[in-house]
Length: 232
Image: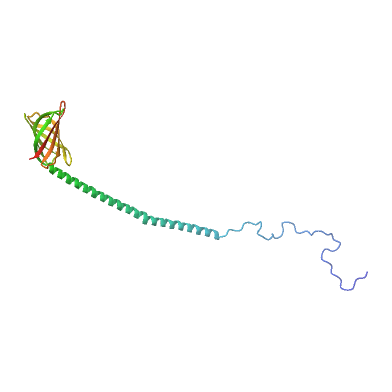
């Protein structure tokens, strides 16, 4: 058999002819280097270190804002509420002082009025009294004398009747600007006087006279005596 001219051709890559064809067998499983990491199906990446620092900054900023608001509220309260309280106290003090002044002035006026009233009632007074029965009919006439002192609520008086006289000790129970209410008790004498009675002295149109009314209890009712007293 003859060959063509030229170099002898190199055999083709692959198994020599005549050998069985098929898939080449690789190494058994479990051997060889691991496959490269592609990022899929692998464990999670480590957390970034910058996140916790950001949270700390946010918390610090919130705390600063809260402190700033608290300071602002305290400042406003100090310069508004505090001053308001002081103003209220000042107004209250002023009102109290005004009330005290008014009360003091009123008290002074009352004292002056009482002193003037005492001066007008002070002195020795005497006059005739006309007595009436409880039914209002005339009973008798008699004389009455009383001494009034401006610095005392007690004193003496005297009733002179046809059959004798009676000495009285009296006490001023109520005193008004123009009227005195007096209770008395007979302490001596030989006249036919009722043991106790009530005297009312009132100012009249004249500074030198007083209107007098004396009430005593009889068995059948109240007997009234009326008259006018003149300053001695």
